[in-house]
Amino acid sequence: MSTINPLHELARWIDEAREAEQPHPASVAFVTVGSDGRPSARTVTLKRLEDEALVFTTALWTRKAREVEANPNVALLFHWPALGRQVHVTGEAAQTDRALAEELFSERDLFHQLQTVVSRQGERIEDLTPLRDRLSHLAQVQETAPPCPEDWGALRVRPDLVELWDEAPDRIHERRLFERDGEGWTMSLLSP
Image (tube, rainbow, N blue to C red):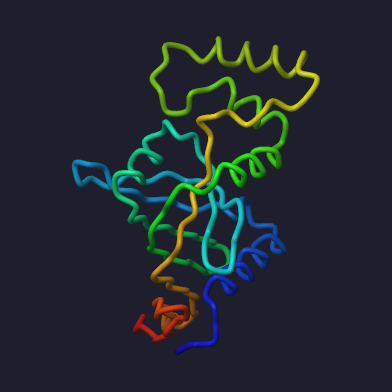
């Protein structure tokens, strides 16, 4: 069993990407599977990294949230091309408690909070103008931060597999595969 927690390594890599001024160092492709068996990917921002899980926020009416509820198996892909690094994660996602969703909503920039109130992310619309007008109006008149909407939540992904991929000039890339083993992890190297 490995004494290394791959999520601690992921945290270090995100910090190094931030220090290297990489754009959006905590951005990640979040992949779900629909009821028809088709995968669906979108780029989201990691909100928190815990010892045993990755935490994201979402509107609970979105396709992502509905697909997680129907099938909690997800895949994540972090990629920092300029640093020659990728992290692949698979695991199970679940909605967290309301208190965490409210806490993370309160940490959002006020403009992002207002955007969340104005837009029903992912729903079909005719025109962006009414949304922009309403957002602009709220930004001018809102005196306090809005409360966390009832249909806003947080997802916690508990990984069962993490691959840390580190590029090498000779193309013999280091690929460390961590698999959950009870409360710990086993680590093996994969051929590049």
